[in-house]
Image 1: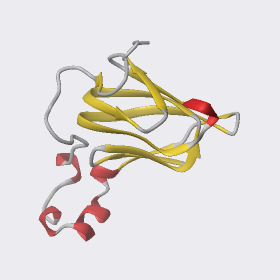
Image 2 (image 1 turned 180 degrees about the horizontal axis):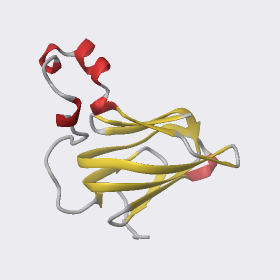
Image 3 (image 1 turned 90 degrees about the vertical axis):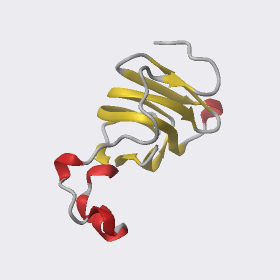
Image 4 (image 1 turned 90 degrees about the horizontal axis):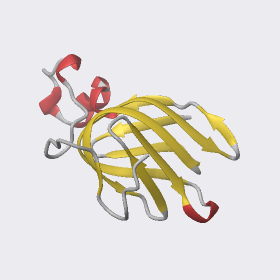
Length: 128
């Protein structure tokens, strides 16, 4: 299983029911439909409502670097491989010629405007 982030979205390659992400940075988060998300300055937790599963976890605006992730999939705890889409050099070179001269260490997972604090855009942020 893979968890991908970058370009303003966080997704998985197979449907999941819940997740817990350890991260650095700050971003404004827009949860996927039917998902409840809570966050603090280092952790984001999301749970699908009504027992549903999804591959689209949330969209974000700001700087987000995922360090660790745990997901619930079919009543099992899974540790997905984390893939930072912003630093995958071959994919970026093939998709846009502007990245041909860009070094991997200069790439960032930032998307949109920088944020000072992570916030949840829709619904209530109950904190964790």
